[in-house]
Image (cartoon, rainbow, N blue to C red; front, side, top):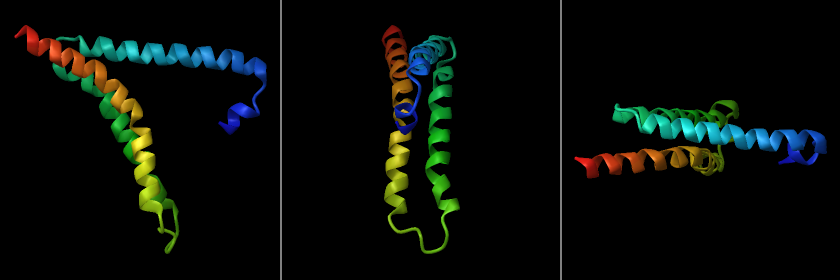
Length: 105
């Protein structure tokens, strides 16, 4: 948020719509992958997000020195849960397509 607060308003006008377009494209890609004949194609993006969130959440353990681990587990757990929000968002189209496939059988 601090990066946005000090940003030039002209750049913000370009960045925010571009970010919305990028999000739309990625969610559309996820929906397309869920509609493929292979059921498990829809798990690619959620799996990548889960792996990336785990790596980013565990990383502080490797950077701190000895004796600095106080409260770090709670911090890393909160960070892991926060970083997994895209994983949850990507699971909604997968679960919807999974449910539709089950109803068609």
